[in-house]
Image (cartoon, rainbow, N blue to C red; front, side, top):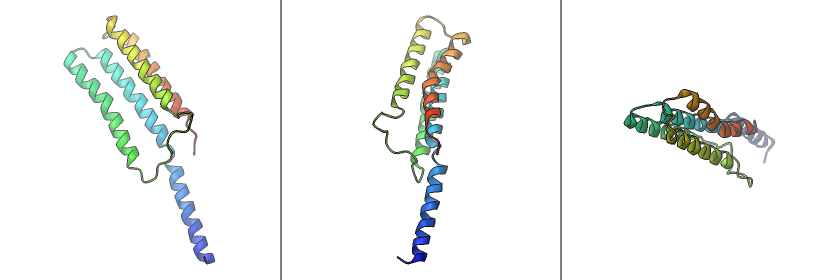
Length: 141
């Protein structure tokens, strides 16, 4: 390999490295969007009154953010994160969010707290906490 080819290869590697570092925020964004989607879905479950509208909006606010961020994340030319490390990465936080969501929605609907923002807004913040913490815990590039 000539010195010019080596220099070109090093410059190409540097460009690729900068591209990967610029996209390293994607896992943080993914986790924050998922946390927000879960919180909005919980607010819809608790605060929207007509049952048909409640179900349609809850389904939409659950599926659309996840589908949009997943499609966006998968179309990136270079993924900044490898598969989860042996300690499972964000999975415990995702399970924690899911369990908190089920508990908050179940408790709120079974005890008749529908339409009471003093319960549903703090519950939505608690539900968003695990994935938000996971996003903040993600290493910076």
